Image: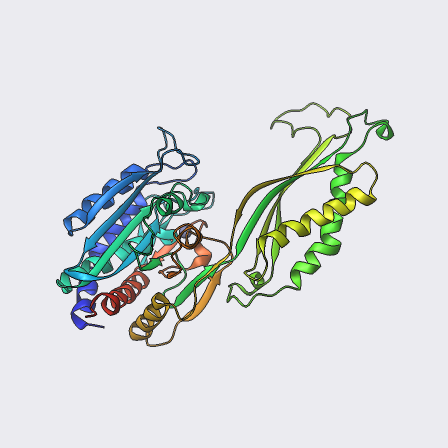
Length: 425
Ligand SMILES: [Zn+2]
């Protein structure tokens, strides 16, 4: 890595801190999807000053988009002097709800012990700030680079990315003829390269019954007991089968190397009373019981098989259990994504990590999905990784923070990666 670039990034430490604080102070909570326009305008102003051409793009008509909460995105592009590859840094601008347990102001950007605190500090405004600083320092250091640098700030990653990266991919922004390398600075730790993620399948299952007086349940049919039978099938057959399947993907933490399923919610019968209600319940046999399942699957498992396995158990119950009726409604699905370890962006960032950190990277994959899925499936761009500063386990927690030194180190890695991709020829 060029020592001038190293010096330039180090010299921007105060700038990096102020930028991160500014980004945290824009409370881009999602849901509902607040202040996307504001954060895009902030990035717009800053990046234009550094010679980027910018576009603000509203994902009109995508889930959650409304005049009150419009889904704004920004794509900024800085052309080099000569033709060459384009490297794109994509960060989501949304953050999840604050939750309880904070000792810092969640939107204050306060600093203590070399860390900046706030909702979104690690996931992922710290990564966004690091990529901006790396790009600006690179441009100042290398006036005659080849190709192009793009930086995007996108909406709604925390709710599926449909008003963000998915929309941009549909509009051609991740077409491999426009962009050749993508780095998503999600908080995977500064010395790890995340190659991809598992898949997800979300569905609601309802069992049906028949309402009757609770004193004569034999005159009705209890939907909750039918759901009990479903859960028993899961315990006896599905969970053991999933636990036996291991992936070759380097998923962390270790427990997520196998297939998993969470039961998000269960509800049957009478609605929960409002808080403070002091009356007694009515006596009814529930005629409906619903669960929502969250099934995470491996790259070795086809989605049809994942779906078919659950359907098979339900059909089996219909064949063997008296009066068992069910309805399964699929809510969403996401296919796994896995970039090849020999892909150019992987090899480039691996070398950059060795140069900056003095040791080879660890390769990982994510248990949950992130925007790589849209770049891969809709954009058909396979040369994509997640790499950025921050401790993944802090994401969505109270007192979330990003280490200032970690941001500097990962900005160095990003800078070194730009040098090897954009100074060729
Ligand atoms: Zn994130």
